[in-house]
Amino acid sequence: MGSPAIDKLSAACAQLQQAADPLAAVDLAQQIGTLADKVQHDAVRAARQQGVSWSKIGAVFGLSKQGAQQRFGKHKHAEAS
Image (cartoon, rainbow, N blue to C red; front, top):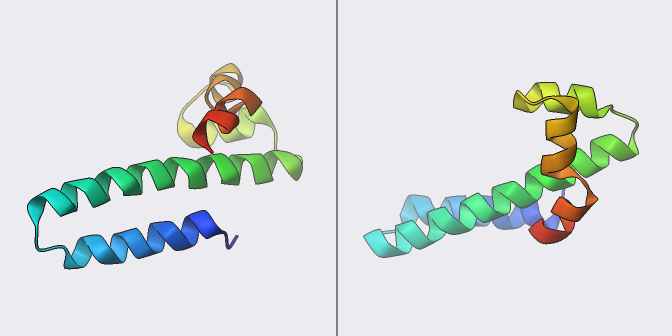
């Protein structure tokens, strides 16, 4: 599941490991969180395109079907991009 978001996430993690400045580390950690959210949304979208049910996706995240739809539905994905 290679993607630009995964590449950016990997690079940010590598930079965080090398960060000497604590504030730079905080900034990188924030970027990592944002990128991880994008990767999650992309993975959910790909799973849905392959026919995985909202119930099964919800179970992965400890959510109900409706909770998964609310968290990762189309309107949420657009916000995460």
